[in-house]
Image (tube, rainbow, N blue to C red; front, side):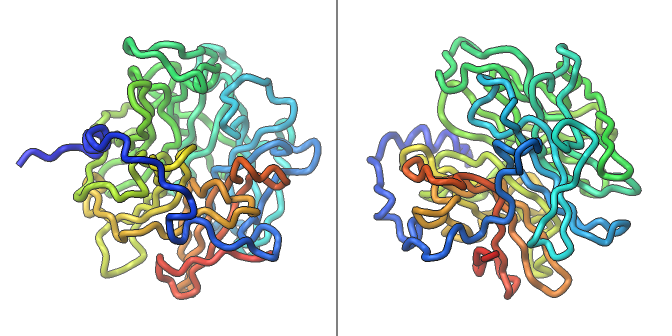
Length: 384
């Protein structure tokens, strides 16, 4: 039997009417009496590289330092206007923590304390900004999957006009990989694609938000593409044995039709060995976009896979919804990173942004929800 893709299914659904936020159970919780539960790292102090925006956190335990390390993207107030304005990317920064909850920024050697900057070569794919995607400890080094944008302004791609909101420099993003012995000083692994990127993106607006795993035989890189033809975010996967030459395998596949809350696709994810011994080999937490609602609010879902290519959604509902209306994450939750702890708890780091009507700071930042039971359905936002 011919299997239609999720994108084809969404195209065939058409406009089914707009669902108001209040009609979706759980989507808008009662406003909290405490300020911004979940927020663990907001904007940085004046002069720091993240004084304007941050996000895209990846958290790993560093044995040598005996501490949790968080790599994240950062943008300061001096960043040029008109470069990928909806993104918070610019440079990559680092923070450290003893418990994974309270964090202290690390003062790196680059502008504003950053540890990685965009390329100074205007011909490179990452010459205007960079953003963190994922970190993998492989053999005796750290591998960083990241993305960056160049100075071109997309207006038409493949004969289709680019939506006005993406007609800015920096949105033509491509993924790349860097390596480091200490997690602070990074060397780019120059890929075989345009400007040293890992893969090319064809007529897509961007290829961004990459993640990487090693399945024992090869590296698999997952990244997001957005086409000007339809507002639908797809996840592509590529394979490599040397981190330089990548072969694009196509879109990941799903065993089931999309749920009502993921009709816009998914745009960020975290893939890791499944901490559930009774589950399939790989676990993916992913950001789903709800195409029924204005501005495509983001929630986080979960899926499993045996081979990293065909995925099975675990639950009928998201495992983390947007926060209450007055919270920093009332507009959506995205960029999930799951960290299992030795005591059985699960730490879910995410990027949150406020609803358009919530203009009181903080309006974005890095959040944390913890499952004390170790179940993916039991996450609660921390209160710091």
